[in-house]
Length: 198
Image 1 (cartoon, rainbow, N blue to C red):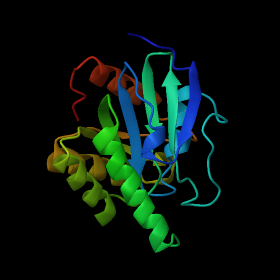
Image 2 (cartoon, rainbow, N blue to C red):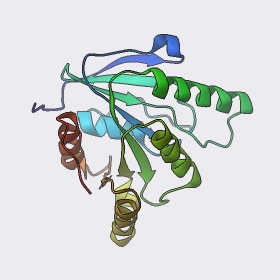
Image 3 (cartoon, rainbow, N blue to C red):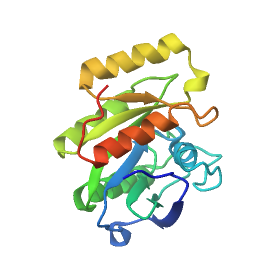
Image 4 (cartoon, rainbow, N blue to C red):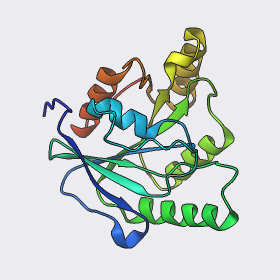
């Protein structure tokens, strides 16, 4: 199904398992470190800079935010991890919410792990990937802030991910629009049950 990706609307922010939304169509999640650019990426896909609220303070977003694309596909923006100033109680609440989400949320097709192009894979990213594998969840990679990294650095990271995980890694930039078409194509292939190969 072809979409123009301009009919994207915010549905709801959820703070506990009681609020999870379930749909008759596929769900694609965006997960990653705090300040990696999840909300900016959703705004890029929707061509709407005001759709998903971009926090000025890393670690501020503590909810799961659902977005509906053309009435037939859902994006779930998950709260970021790894923000050092969070209290122990906040970190524990995040872990509990994520465990409930991956265990109870119906219809998850693929989880996109967002990686900052300038930083590369971190131990927390690898921990998330191990967790997704353990849960039997599919995953792919999106490289954010590509406009701020050197081209050779990005190419090296794409190769590393392909060799290590046999998964695609799509460089994107919310500033320049790089990667938007490629990411949409990848999502629509995965939706049809096709592979989005590296």
